[in-house]
Amino acid sequence: MKNVAVVTGGTRGIGKAVSIALQQQGYTVAAVYASNDAAAEQFSNETGIHVYKWDVSDFAACSNGLAQVTADLGPVAVVVNNAGITRDTMFHKMTPEQWHAVINTNLNSLFNMCRPVIEGMRESGFGRIINISSINGQKGQLGQTNYSAAKAGDIGFTKALALENASKGITVNAVCPGYVETDMVKAMSPDVVSAKILPNIPAGRLAQPEEIARCVAFLASADAGYITGSTLSVNGGQYLA
Ligand code: CAA
Image (cartoon, rainbow, N blue to C red; front, side, top):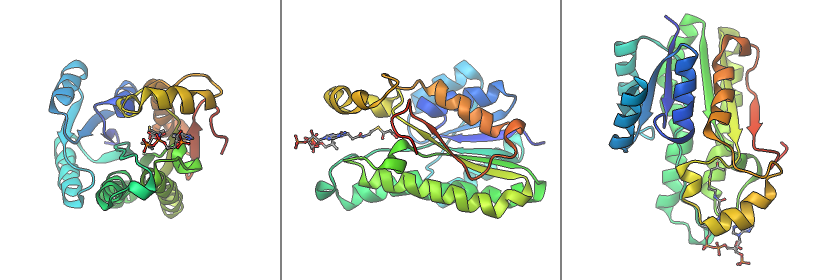
């Protein structure tokens, strides 16, 4: 069986759209979430998608959770590392807690989620790993030294893991969304969005989560088997990497 996909942060925002897109593509999806039980329950009821609660910044939690998914649904063929947080603040005001929270959730989670499944993927000769990085990992962003560092790290991780596993039928790619209409962007000050962000997006609008999800679904598909180590920018022209 090669059809189980795990999506972190998979019940809200970009991850919700990715979970639904992969389900429509025929995958049995396990959507991992961290805290919002009500949203996860509603999502599961609406879609029939399995939901699992664990903290992606905790290696033991990921190992145990992935073992549970394998026991329930079968071996994991696709991992979408989408879970992410922001703790935006200028660096001269940033606390160690704000730094470590973002690095742990947005970067260390890739080790935590991939290490437990990579050997199984290598043995089966198939795997798809898709890491949701960000435009701000490519270009940097004022107020996001922590987030930009983590998201740039996600791209380096993607390239190195792709090289190690290209001969094993495993592809590893990064998607770099720009500003997407999700809770994360809605949490920003509307003044900052309208004055500083929107004027810099040539497309003149935020992205919809489904526009990112369609890219992830393509990278997970058999058609994308020769694409590995790539960085796909989906940002309305805001940054041309
Ligand atoms: N570009 C250029 N200048 C900016 C800016 C921007 N995007 N945002 C703020 N500034 C300027 C402000 O105008 C201000 O300049 P002056 O001192 O000359 O007036 C200076 O930077 C400091 O800004 P604030 O007064 O807003 O400082 P603050 O301490 O109150 O807030 C902040 C700092 C929280 C970082 C706030 O500026 C902010 O939220 N900025 C946007 C950060 C951002 O883009 N986050 C992305 C979140 S979405 C996401 O991360 C998803 C993804 O992958 C894209």
